[in-house]
Length: 248
Image 1 (cartoon, one colour):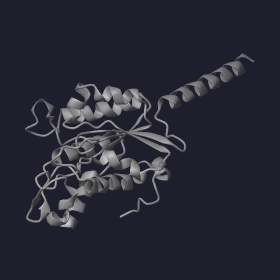
Image 2 (cartoon, one colour):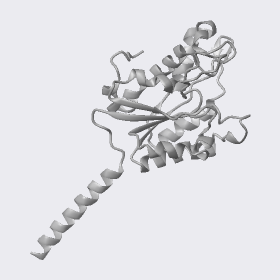
Image 3 (spheres, rainbow, N blue to C red):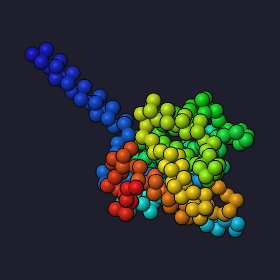
Image 4 (cartoon, rainbow, N blue to C red):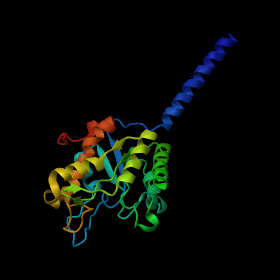
């Protein structure tokens, strides 16, 4: 009798522990989702764009156009931020406080040389900051999705010449090692720009001299590339995308 009681109590405790552990893990929402975005100026929203670039638009500003009304997109990306400064300035803490279901994370443009104390080492603290985002998102029941930074529209001999390779590769390796979904926006943007060419992609930029940021047309293209990749890396989001998001 005592043995049987002991077994029952053990089963109850095991079941309770299993439920508690499951509750701590990021759970996919059923039928709706809140998606937060963090990153730099290429992702940010511009309700009051500058006079010299009136069409300036970040891809995070228009990503919601590819989701159904069951998705709330919260764009916390900030111009000029790197993986380091976004945390140090308290923006990440504010994002965590919102408790979204997902967070899309894109950094790299302001992590490179010449960015002062915002710069990070792709073999060192850049990876550490990415892992901090991943760890703290998961601790708060949020599912992280990494997004490799799109290339700048810099051409050499008719092809894209990117300077973001070390940070892109670091993000890919962190995604593999930490088992995080990864949207390959960098590779997709390189392919898209190479197919269009320099002249053919000119209207994707907000001005002749700005080859980093986007016009509304360019932002919509980047957002579409992200949306098209999401079902493969996070199947739970597939049913929340509009039918107009056709695969390339």
